[in-house]
Image (cartoon, rainbow, N blue to C red; front, side):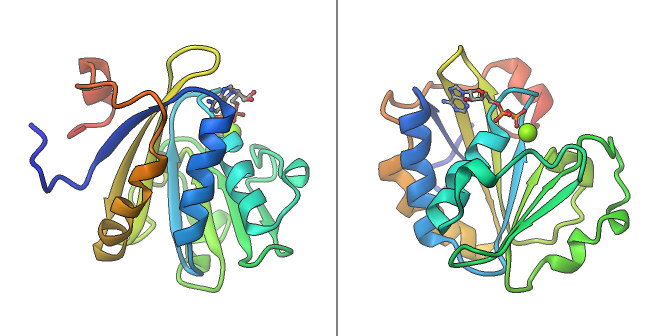
Length: 182
Ligand SMILES: Nc1ncnc2c1ncn2[C@@H]1O[C@H](COP(=O)(O)OP(=O)(O)O)[C@@H](O)[C@H]1O
Ligand SMILES: [Mg+2]
């Protein structure tokens, strides 16, 4: 039941080049204080997308590793500092005070959170939610859900980078169960 004004966006990326292209467009509109909330199963590409965004910010992507054990990694060498968190190990209902990332919101850094759904909405009203879904070895479906006025305004500018294969059409029911409203 997507309306023309529906701020959600879903598209398919067909490989790492496509992901890089999306990351490049996204990085152009990123500014300090932004929050990107990544969801999707293990192997969906959350860390890989973070690496590509980091690269666009001027960080060596080979230096970017999954913070599954450290919970938070900070990269300060790019044009905007990047805080990269992974809530997987904290589990559902994660107590974010343990890792202090909520304090980082609205500061000078960009915050990217993997397994953001475990944070249960602790990230404020302004964020870009990105759901990644595995299609096959190389392809992923991405769904963008802009939260708040600034992301609703920025997401349309990402349209030229939303995949090379075209929209995959309606979401399967399994996705709707996992991500109500998509
Ligand atoms: N189009 C794609 N987008 C993202 N990852 C991809 C893509 N194609 C292949 N991959 C591979 O899938 C794996 C995704 O792993 P990772 O980013 O660690 O997932 P997650 O952080 O979601 O658990 C990486 O090995 C990556 O190289
Ligand atoms: Mg990861």
